View (cartoon, rainbow, N blue to C red):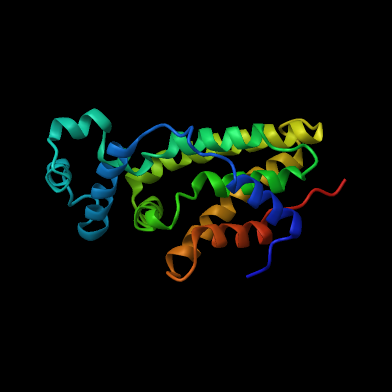
Length: 209
């Protein structure tokens, strides 16, 4: 795996130091989602009912639907909060750093919930990549993140959002994220952070005027 550049390491370090206390409290929903994902991975998404999930979590069926409209929505329990962290990190970033490095560092920080959440995060990645009902929302989520990346990169470089470089960065980051998660799922010895950084270094183009 390629070593990150010194500037990329610094951006990562600066992002990690940011207080993430602003993330909305979703503990109960997160725990319910973790129970559901364990069952999906063990028994299959289609073979797991809402009643199965509620029983495993020790809640009622009614409580499940208070948190999630459908079974597939449990996989996206942290999605909105992650996106808000990502946007905040971009807005608070220094202007002297190449925008692609800022984007990748913020992306990693937004998705990294810590090693104690590895089981949940690995289950989420596996389900996103394998379950059609989950993948339907994935396309919407990816589009939202790409739009924010295009906006940020274009703004920092004084370009239009549909110029080639902002578009290339946005698509390269999302493609590299998918590749990194596939690699991470096959390697229990690696962290998601390391896999993301390695793929970003390989796949996301630097800006050359």
